[in-house]
Structure formats: C-alpha cells, structure tokens
Amino acid sequence: MKTKKRIFKTITWQLLGLAWFMSYALVTGGDLWYTLGLSLASIPAGSIMYYCHEWIWEKFEHHKGEKP
Image (tube, rainbow, N blue to C red; front, side, top):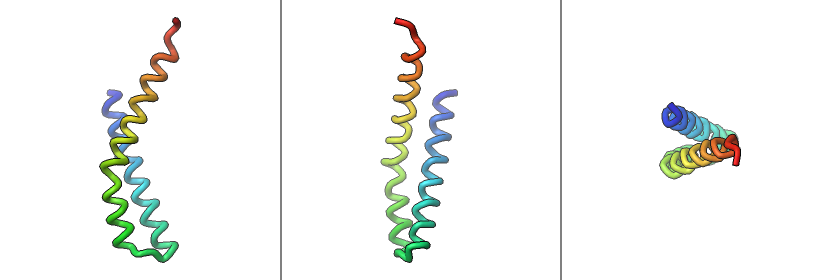
C-alpha cells in the first residue's frame, strides 16, 4: 500500500508542477510551447526524485519510531 501511495503522490505532484509552470508561462508572457516542453521533459527526473524522497522519509519515520 505504501508503494501505491508514493506513486499516487508522485503523479499528483508532477501534475501540480506542470499546471504551475504552464500558468506561470501564461502570466509572464513566456513561450507557451517551450514551457510545456520543458515541463514535460522534467517529469521523468522529477518523478524519480520525488518518489525517492518519499521512500527515504518513510524509512526515516520507521526508524524514528523504533527504540534503540
């Protein structure tokens, strides 16, 4: 179940990031297609980094709860 939760959080994080970058491009008057391409290109790396971040924090929380 933890793996599914991590994957779901990773996907929602990436979708929010994509929406943020795209809205920022519209507001600042940047090139919409360039920003879309850049945002889409960052999804694989960002997904891996966020997934690993969640995995590390789960391990940290697990060890934090244990008594020495």
